[in-house]
Length: 311
Image (cartoon, rainbow, N blue to C red; front, side, top):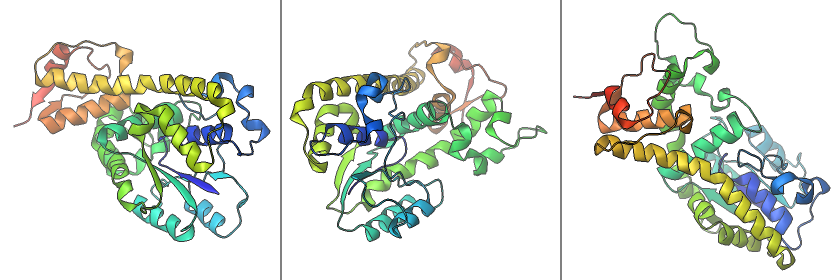
């Protein structure tokens, strides 16, 4: 068995789809046939979540069941995640996994730095919280964090759905960095003999990276190269909207710091991107006057009027 070991949002479903369909000797289940799925199984949100992942362990109990032989051991590929919803730290989860499968082949997907962690953060929002899975913002567990308990008055808050946009943005800005920063340290826990690929490689050298992974798992099926190339092009273009949105956040930051006029559409930033921008502004010495700011500014000039320099 080959294990695709990843953090949720870092393209594990896609890699599972790739190896099941483009490796030479991989037994493909009928429901995994790409010819039966529109757009090669890629959804409008850029995910491959139409495609059912194999051996997807995302809780401590599922890990324990697999190690105890209670879950199918005859899979070609498994897709465990090493961030298991606050049940354990990433480092301990990776060490636990290695202890139980010390000699099996592992393709380890990691997040190289904060920028790519932020892309992953957006992927979770668009592909899991509001995309095909539509799990809602409760998926992130924000309600259980100290940031959620910020008191803005007498309003009774039980979940994210009870919050106005400005309240959600403010809470997200206080919370998200610690949530995603742990991902950037995962590589330090991975054993030397695992096959390691950063999400930067997946996004910037997609064809070469997917081909390498196929050749690690088995071999890339030469008879499917045309289909493989079309899949790569279609999948990669479907990720660009998240990259463009995050780059806009950085462009806005540059505009504020260097007094450049930049404008954007209201729909160009989701509340997660607004929260990242609010956090970055705060870290640079600008406090967003966020109270009742449900409609975020759409140019740097208007945004400047909503900032207060932190002494």
